[in-house]
Image (cartoon, rainbow, N blue to C red; front, side, top):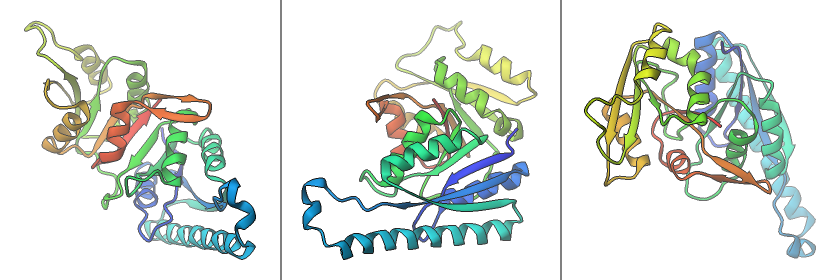
Length: 275
């Protein structure tokens, strides 16, 4: 059961992650903590001596102002929704923020973060990927184009039999139980045998929980897996995607698997991932 949520608040004028987290809290009658990071100025060490202190202080002041504005927007939205909520500002470097949010997330049922709005490696993107690897909690990534709150008419579960996918399905059970329809989807490069029904056992397992389940195998030899998943999600009008988050940490540098990276860059609906 989801009763405690933490969300990494966006620092822009529009915060889809914060608003989505509030809608999740409302659906589950949960409490939600909004965290806004006031990032320390990023100054290359080689030019540190040539940077005027006034410039560094101006950057720090701007970051603090953005964080305070994010907290105010979040608190106002939570109040309008009648949701139990609190917010806090945390000062940290980009790498330090990833570690702090990951450690904080371990004391919550769910972490909600937002998708980066462009192709550059933003501070939020570094933090969010770190949370996926290090928090030990399910993470919902919210597209920057997201406008609606939580909707669970159809939840699409990506299944490949892996440990990560298994963990994601278990972590998503509170959402699956609230959904009207669950679709288990497998992407294969070639058609299976006529008597083979991949995912049937998983379908039976979820059906024993009282879920309405469809099992589908998609054969797509010419299209990459990411595009196949997102195309099918659009065709089936999926409101949420559930999948394993793949990758590893090498000397604190987070390296995502190809499909995981592709989904996070191009997703069009909220994606629940577990690692």
